[in-house]
Image (cartoon, rainbow, N blue to C red; front, side, top):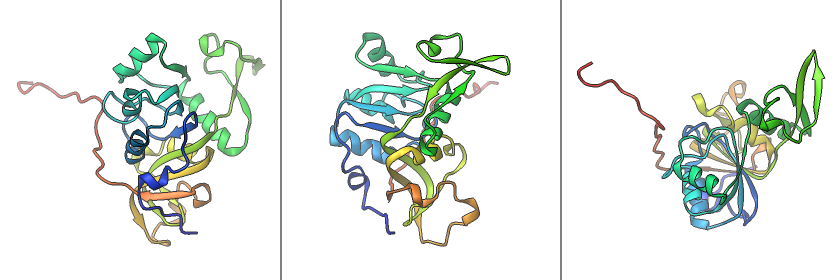
Length: 233
């Protein structure tokens, strides 16, 4: 039951070229920073990355993009990364843009064993091209298939050696559903605690979904865009 590994390098063992990875987070909040750095050092290539965002040019998944380690991005918001834009427009990077709610539900469905579902989101746009359509309650819905991954890499606030996880604030977005949808789930946590220290009523991801857990280091907690008033206002 002890799922603790020493560090990010040990946690990502088994990740190989051309695999599909899920990476939790929302913008730069709740992303597995240490694991991403370890992937850069591992120099795996041809990755398909499922993530709400693509980081920024020098942080998060932007580091993997910079090294040309990502072949395809499946995301909903990518507007903060100039290198992503360059690679997409040049045809170097395959991109599947998905409405944010549909992306979250496709990950959740994958973890729940639901192969597909119908949603009105995206109907009448390029998102719907080539997808089955049905009418429900007088509204058109498109069929979206579930998403799973070879490895899901998530970031939590606290966790114990059994793999039980608690997320904090905005980090409790894509992380919980992605933790359920990986064949192997790696949890990076800010603080490792002893079993029994986490209130069972407030555990967001039960340890049954987690295979490896480690305590990360040196979190930068960046802000994507900082807007402040001028001094004279």
